[in-house]
Length: 215
Image (tube, one colour):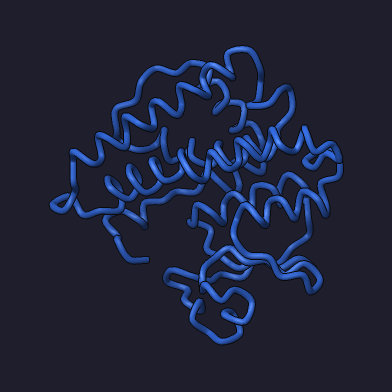
C-alpha cells in the first residue's frame, strides 16, 4: 500500500494528499514533522536525506519533494487524466507547476503566510509583508486572465497546474488580509471547493500555526 509521511497542516503535504484523493488511491498516512517529530530518525533520513516531508513509499519506490511526488503519482497512477504521453501537453503543465513553486509559493507561503500569520505580531515586518502581498496580487492577476475563459488553468479539466497553484487559495482567502477583487480566481476557488479531495486535504484549519515560527 502507498505510504505517505507528513502532517496534515503542511502546505506541501496537502498538495500530495489532494492528488491522492483525486486518484482515490488506498494509502496509509503516517504523521511526521512538526509536533509529531520523526524527521531526524535514521529510518526517515534513509528515505529522505533532507529530513523533510512529504515522502512517499509506493511499493518500495521512495519519492520526496512534493512536485516530484505529484509527477510520479500522476505518471504511475493517473494515466491520461493527470499524465499525458504528449511531451507538449506535459510541458504546459510543468511550466505552471514550476511557476507555482518558484514564484507564487515563495511570495504567498513565505512572504505573506509566514510573514503575517506565522510570525508573532510584534515581530512582523510589515513593509516586507505588503511587498509580498502586492506580488501575490500580480501572480493571481495572471491567473485571472487565464480563468476568465476557462474552468481550470489549462482548460476544462483539473490538472497538476491547478493542484500546485490552487493549494494556496484556502489560506489566501481565509487570512485577515486585504485582497483585490479577482472574480475569475474566486470562481475557480469555489469550483475547487466542490471537490471532495480539496475539502478533505486542503481546507484544513491552520489556527495551530498562528505565531509559530518553528514547527
